[in-house]
Image 1 (cartoon, rainbow, N blue to C red):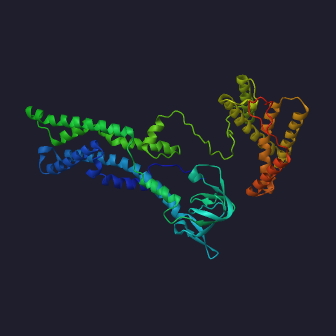
Image 2: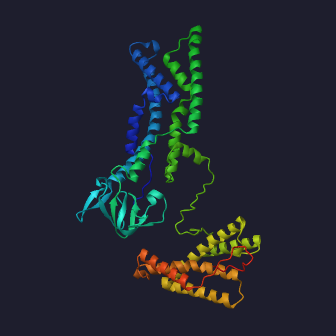
Image 3: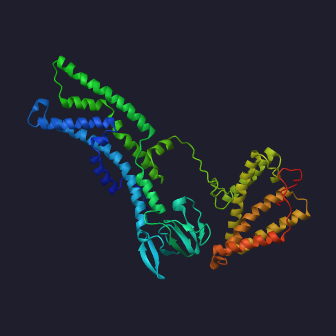
Length: 484
């Protein structure tokens, strides 16, 4: 496979930036950068002096004046090029989004027959078909069928969602991907009003804004420029007094060397370098201010509260030390969390969780316990027992724990945590047994049907098993972690 790498200076962007670097020579545009504006004025003056020196050597030789003029021109063009590259990147992102919108194929239904068209040709009220691995061409509502949709491109949530006809979960967005089943969708937006169109308008409408550091430096550099203008102007009377002629090229060269030309010209280039470094790490930065802020960060915390699809806290990856098995690390984490909890509070009974401190210990233990249960389920399934065998093993284990609970004096707290760990792999193996393919040891039921079967089993258990009022955690009657 050929690996692709994000590159900052792409050919089309460089060509556009070169064009814009010339357009930005317009004084009305360059006036926003005082340093480079004064350099441009010096460049124009040197152009006049160079033409004059072609026939008159009173202001130096033509070659000398032309060299100074060329250096000044390249300095201004480079500063403009650095800023134009930043703007070209935003336009390239908008163009990439526009290409996605226009080139997505759609299976349009016309009089009951399918026609292959582009997404840009769809109109409000049209009906199209999408099946597994199809990209949804535009925004719409499902009128027939049910499907699993990958919406990570627009929401950032990696877990797929289920969309079906009827109800409040029937809308789909252009640019998302169908992972399973088949749906019939009616277009609900006019051309140019879809979600992708709004994203394009947002990207195109965002111009490159100066960062706070750039603004502060611009003010400082403008002050230095004014000071050095005064310094260079005062040299003329001193030169006349000393009977030492100073050419215009010498004045302008000295002025450009004194003012902070490099900083003024490289402010935008510095921002580009930061964006390039972020891009190499697959991070897209929307502004130079974001790059500056990132430079001040030591630790980044991401909060996914409210969007956790599985509904339970669970650690998804452990990195054990050398010669340590991952299962051993997970088991050690569970035991360590229980040990620290017991040492700090005196018990690991969930009915005593009444304060933030105890709740912290509880959720840490839950996180490791969930992961340990998942690891047990994977180990049993991979050991050759399969999904049905794994479900029987964990079901039998829970039955043994229930028998110990009613017939022995084994700690109810210990039995609770053992049962909690076993419920995770039991649910996973039963779910896998229902929806995995036949050749993998499953029943090959669709996910909606498997979910319906599990929901029916839960409802039956609720109706059959006797129910009783729960006891408030930490209350007087709380004897153990027996769930209500």
